[in-house]
Amino acid sequence: MLFLYPSSPAGSSSSSETMDTSVSQNSRPGGAPQVVEDEIDQYLIKQDGKIYRNRDQQLCRHGPLGKCVHCVPLEPFDEDYLNHLEPPVKHMSFHAYIRKLTGGADKGKFVALENISCKIKSGCEGHPPWPEGICTKCQPSAITLNRQKYRHVDNIMFENHTIADRFLDFWRKTGNQHLGYLYGRYTEHKDIPLGIRAEVAAIYEPPQIGTQNSLEILEDPKAEVVDEIAAKLGLRKVGWIFTDLVSEDTRKGTVRYSRNKDTYFLSAEECITAGNFQNQQPNICRLSPDGHFGSKFVTVVATGGPDNQVHFEGYQVSNQCMALVRDECLLPCRDAPELGYAKESSSEQYVPDVFYKDIDKFGNEITQLARPLPVEYLIIDITTTFPKDPVYTFSISQNPFPIENRDVLGETQDFHSLATYLSQNTSSIFLDIISDFHLLLFLVTNEVMPLRDSISLLLEAVRTKNEELAQTWKKSEQWATIEQLCSTVGVPLPGLQEYGAMGGSSHAVAAAMWPCQHCTFMNQPGTDHCEMCSLPRS
Image (cartoon, rainbow, N blue to C red; front, side, top):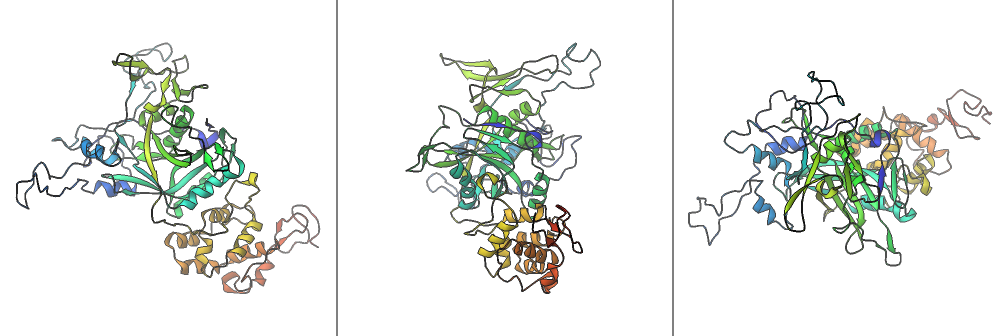
């Protein structure tokens, strides 16, 4: 059983979106703000999206240029077509859902993507404020939970197995659960009409406390910098991943199969955490009066499968769940992870009634109050895959640079580990050596010589895979200083004397800063005593 305890900005909720409805592609609803949608959304809006079929030799009785009910193109939201795919698709894509709403004679003129609100509307002056008074004008409507017909992301794909293997290494070495943020990009998923795929290129592991059955997310002072560096690399935060693994037989390497239809797929607390993250990463939508609707942020669980091997399962929570989480109306049950609980109204907060539909023992459909609530009403499953032909945004090394925030394993990011990495990777192509997501983050966030303001050229070289740009940056003063700092830790670097600042001798840079022999602090030139410990230079 895995519980997550979000803290400070990493797990706090922020303003976001929700619900399930939609509007015209060609006209914005009244009062909708001007927003710039994601590139993948702009691309899919322009696509035809129809499902073209070949002429049926047995059923079609017309000529080669004619069309009939057996071969006419299908709409992207055709449920019969989606149900007959292998495997069947339960949720149409979000853009197919928009086409469905805007495909009538009115072209979606009266359709609006409204976000659910569970809060009392402000500005009602006909009565005292809650809890002294409430009326039908300001009272939020009751919510009946329904299976969401669409999903914002239709597939999650890791570029290669190495990304996932390095993430799982933490659990293999400690037995403790672990969490990371997925960085990648959104692309077209061609297996589903107008589908969207989240491609994962790297996993960033934030500060956290993990045990065998719990995770606590800590405040991350580097979160803003990581997002900035990822953006310059052409990436963005597309989701999060966590492990829920228990070893079953260490000799066979099997794990326990614990998440299934008889237990749960996501616990209530995990659903709330996913809802928080999705609220923090809203989906920009020009068809919503709020400028956003739903979220493309995904959840991946590394857990045991039916064959007792590690499987990666992808999910999102519904827009209704996002609304309940955002307005603090949903709570987990301590002793039943598969159940949530809709809060009751109090003097501090009015909570609308939340219902769900169930089947009683006589086969009749009944409406139940969501106290408690089975969380499967809130979950949308997403296929998670690995490509047959691996893709590499970042280079793969047999001796990779350590991952951040793994001090508990003795794997630290410092200049000694950087010097070791450079000494073990002697490729003549500098771009192959430097194209490591975790190494680039270290160069920007290290406390001795952060390169946040001078690394843009290198990030552009990595993004475009341009070796010439990488060589230009290698000859800069910043890289020469980095090499000198590495040389002070006692690890010899190949080719250190070849290039210094601007291609000159690197001995000139050695005099720039000097390390204290007692505390290793890097001091400015022209000083005889350490600025940190005040001991003499020699």
